[in-house]
Image 1 (cartoon, one colour):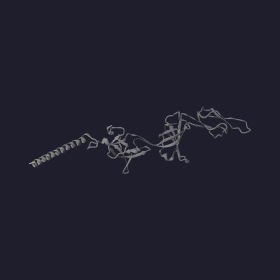
Image 2 (tube, helix red, strand yellow):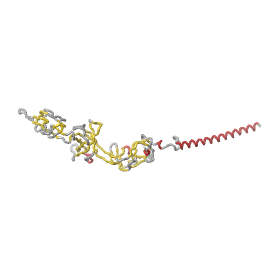
Image 3 (cartoon, one colour):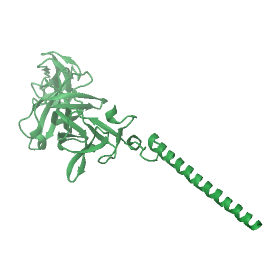
Image 4 (cartoon, one colour):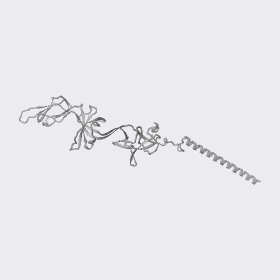
Length: 322
């Protein structure tokens, strides 16, 4: 009897244990479903489909396409000169006996600027005056008292300080690009932080056979008292210019199957590859002839691939949300 009671007790214990196991399995299943639902519906990080494109987007820099101007320049050295300068020659050969004017002095037409002694040993002293043939400022006086000059020697140069130009010599390989009206940008040692604008005023019709260059004169767009005749000028001369065109940084152009492409931001804020036709370029930029439309946002910095989610640097918004 005791053995039967013991067996019945063990049986009850087994049944209770099995019921407990079934209950535990049911609770675990319900909890698992709720957790999965929360992860998918509330966007818990790293679970289900809650990871947004915003979280995984690559930060990029963009440039919106608008018509602008691109220029190609060549770097040259030039000299600042007076447009209306005249060399003054003595009427006779001899030694400079007196100098009445020096560089920087203003003179009037007919005014004596120096005397030349043409006499020889044993002959009477006879000073010959050297007079200014024009009014202006003496911008160069190359001789001193005691120097010997001749009738072919320019004793001084008179010009205007208010009517200056810059002369440059341009290699003949650029001759086909030269035309009057093209802009130039001038830098001076005396004002290194500033750029002065100028325009091509005249072009020599011939090429110098000794150095294979053409003489080009640039007129300053605005006269400045800091610019003086005789100054050395560094000139960025524009040899090509295209207006009202699309321009992107050189770094924005990628090679895809030997074609030039750029990446633009799509309405879905992803990178989209677009084939383009390029034109003129300089050290930093390149012209886009075909393939882009006004307002399109070209990715200029950031490593992207087709379809990759993107957002603009410095913003919490993706480009098309701004």
